[in-house]
Length: 425
Image (cartoon, rainbow, N blue to C red; front, side):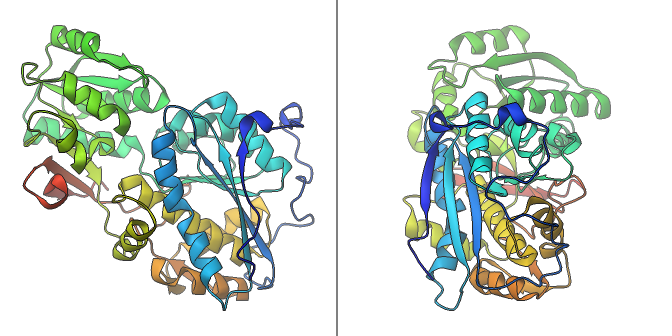
């Protein structure tokens, strides 16, 4: 197998000839295999090339996060390439969304032009909505996002082509509302949210659960820009709203600024989301964070140890939540493509449900290369992932996730202590 299989980074500014003017057309996608889509019967040849696009913010305000997730998303490719017994070649291309929805649509167009029928990504919710609705879905390209948590994806008219390994914020919001009302005993709350679809939808989902189910009151929703270098004005507005509890629905890279501005004199009671489950935040803030709590999907898949060891061996630092999801997203796509036997979106979509359903030959991060070979030979496989068991419902949403109620603890290994586990289903 050629370890030098084509690996390129597509900058969206080089989109070239655009398919945007052809949006809605359903002819043969340039560069993909033509003919009738495979039924997912697993009868494909083991001597072929699997093509994978990876759409992440590799420049712009979220580039640091994008690079970390890229390191995880490419690990299954590396495993496959390093296996001397696997004849299938893996070609992947990185498409830079630049943290911008319009640029992401251009990047998606470039992938379509070059015949990529499946994509790991995009990352952010607003980016995913733009790229999938404008380009990927009309051209029947399968995508699996490791970090898009907006509830909008659940009801998107996507023809079944959009999947995600990240958990919907509709689920996390219900868990947070339950903790706020029953364990914290609060009557009022406010949200501080990053001013995009992710932040707004999470805020709205929390409001619905907190008010409708638990009879609470939301005193304000306060937006903040992802590029803001201070949150002082937003904190002042929160103080005027006088909530019992504040939900910060922001990105990880915004955490240091927020917690620095939330110095001890600003005595807000916080309940954090999964994005702020950052053990190293202790080292970035000048006062103790101990006791501040939050929720996050529990990372407890069969391959959690294997992935963690591989990631830390290849990359500087420990993986966070969305790195686990990125690994699983790529692994599922590679297995589905191998089982489908061709770079065809419809065939890959059908195969995703097959390779993540119970009853097949077990494949974990330990055996991903063997799993690709078995799938290509026609064997039904069942992928059990790094983050969790990895299954999808009819909307492409992950299933059977347990949540962790956690707490910042500077004395604990990793800076985080688990308080409790909650099953939202």
